[in-house]
Length: 227
Ligand SMILES: [Zn+2]
Image (cartoon, rainbow, N blue to C red; front, side, top):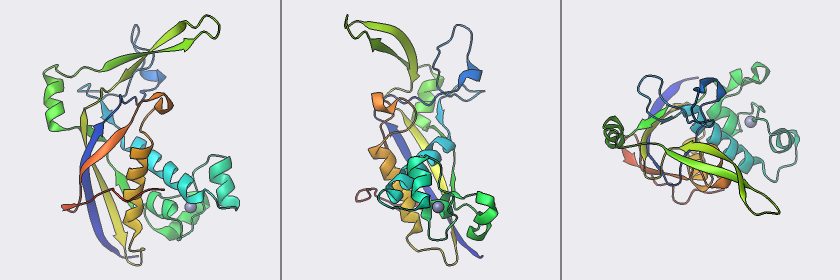
């Protein structure tokens, strides 16, 4: 399998509604928020793990691809909620994101897509370092069904709207790969815009847009990509 090129896709992720990517319970500080966001361990800057972007792209692409199909793979993804593991060379998800399914994935060659962690853009990094960017704390309540009052407030930490992260992806093209394979990556990004990143999205968190998108320096528009 001959590697023909490695394409570099770059851009900005702009947060439209507060973004909550949870840090997990093991990083809980005493007296801290019970729902903190993930932060760089040394600089304390918020960031978006590449795995969050990649995982969301993959799951949205799979759900859109398998919607309407009626076979075992469809059941696996849409009913069991598991990642596709069909390992078919015709399956964009398995080719782009890889699969370890009983080593069947070996025939597909290496995973095509690398999604790097997205860090604050330079402008926002400077603001953060000058203490001009603080994280937002949103209180979520449960409404008492009879009294109509808000109860059990839980503080949820979020990256405020307007903040920008720089992101970059690397995409490998092998000899004999479908020519439009990279378009699935663009479609995955567009599906994230239509859906959300991070947690609590059904309650309004995590709407984002990808801006200033380029592939090897050439402008890319996500307009026109959809389900
Ligand atoms: Zn598959």
